[in-house]
Length: 189
Image (cartoon, rainbow, N blue to C red; front, top):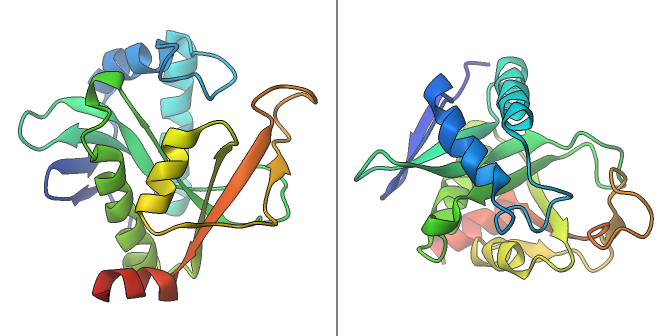
């Protein structure tokens, strides 16, 4: 498959990662507020390693987590994209949609706008049947984005994230889904 290297929406560019994204990405990933629903903020080295894994996913599958920038200023604001679920779960194998934005870009609708662009890619270019998303039960902001893009919570899909230790407050997760037919209805609805 030819890699999908760039997509655009009304206000955003989803693009490949550049080496000069590391400073902004590392700052965002070190922000305790941005990372409050993750086990811990990331060090600069951990952020660089994550970019490496994202690039590897693109090399293997042709898609992944795109770097996200504003069209008007070119400012790096975070990442949004699609990736294969990398742990054993009842709903896997699956492709998930996810996002992480720098705090100063919250509340502007960028996460939903970028996620819509990724869903369009998932269902029209990649021809996926379904996309999932999951997060900690306490991460209401991400759940609102999931709902805004037409995803529906799976009432039987809650799970304990296997990469977090038993008893960890972020371990209980909710699962959301959207399939191609439902996405198409939202486009014409």
